[in-house]
Image (cartoon, rainbow, N blue to C red):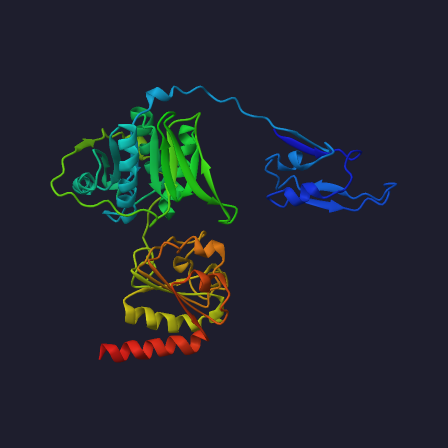
Length: 409
């Protein structure tokens, strides 16, 4: 167990450790009994992650850190070959994020000179989708089909993929950073005792070491971190939707479809699927929309989203929102765009009353055209936009609606 403590006699209360702590878990407290009235650093043990930043920052050696590093099991990386994409399906249809992953992972497999494989788990008729994956670039498709697997459930899906990974030993496994992927990938990684990098926005490989370089936003999107898993295999990542272009369809492309031998012991399940209840608050999924009309704190309340919905419907688009609007309960979470919501890449993104905090920008900065409507001409969104309209959105948006209706007559 790791431990960290402040050595009272050495601490001079300079506060440098508190300034440098990236997690804000160090505070400075008064100690009037000290002859020089120095303050004392105090660490919130319940929140400390033992990163050691404070130890390096302290010039007086007043912080003592002992980390219990678990012994790393030696892994023969040469036993692991191949790049895998988990082919997520919902109600029997392949999710579009899978085609994006196939496009990017094809490049990785070619650099590593290994086949690109897809893993398809689903109901009895899911095998019919295997050829679609081959035509999008997969060289092999592992299929595990069973009526009990028609809908995603954690226990059996995790057991099946874990067993398949242990048997076939791929060196890289990639999933979409969807609701399913985020739940699923972490369980599999824990079972096979490997690392997992979540919400990646870029992937590349070091040919010499065959290490996967997994890049993702960190510290609220203020920096980009590139993470390696050098001591474990396979290397696992989840990748955000819409950060890569979909693989093109190559009609008639040939590949190998491998039916995985069924093992009923893998189908054990602690839960029961009862019903899927979809979000019917929007006709179009914002992740797939070509046009998104998004609202933020500037809308002032739920009523403002009715105006945005009218504009979105006229344009054949979807309604999005900032985290502030969702947290205020003005609209459901399924509409949230940003680091803690959906990543989108529409042709047109119309930001109404959104200031443009970095957490929101990382979720929509791949949009082809950004239109910003805001009273503040100096906010980040207005600076990032291709077209900025300074003004009251409750005056601008109704005019847009009126003009579009006239054009459609």
